[in-house]
Length: 261
Image (cartoon, rainbow, N blue to C red; front, side, top):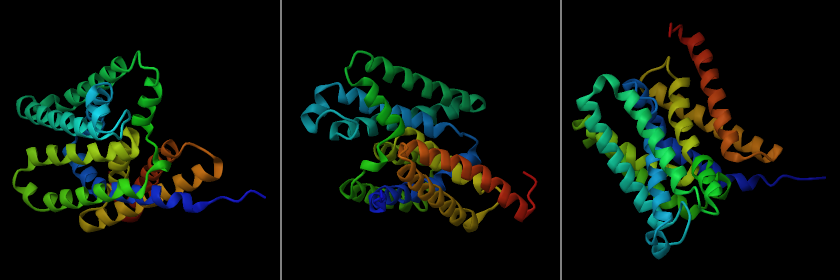
């Protein structure tokens, strides 16, 4: 009889909880601002920076080829920071078409990444890893520095960033997304930000934040469990569960709260 080793999911689930620690509060703010696709755009810009570094001597000197190399991470952070500054400037100059500009930034970064990897022998694999991530292969060693970084981000988010809301939001968002892409990939970054915020749309205040964490954690647990049981790709399965949780949360919380939206 085949037995499943559920201990394999401990570190991936911890990675999911770590991502949710920052993404739930950021996602609620993204939804409030009405700039839904900013996370996809910034994540794709960060991925483009990682790809560019992976194809140059920078990443080879510092760690080696791959989306988690030190050079790739530094380049991803720099690219995401530049993208955040660009979107901040665009919001000031053309606020009425900000969502369209965010979409163009995403499409450009995605296309540029494809062009950079068009002739690389492992280009398709590299793009897949950046998009869907390798959640099952995350290690405790990777989580520790991200946990320290996220703690600093949350401290700034609930502190000094409140005094410079526009630039502070974009820069903290860029740093957060850069770290998250290295852990879980672009698709899970988007789903982790938006799904809990959508699911708890009818709530407010601390109740919404706590419910968002619970929804996200349940979706990660269900997705990881299903991926192991049915031998499915972990990242895509968790993304699917987060999307289903978003719709379930809309129906559940709307019925209980009597909200009209």
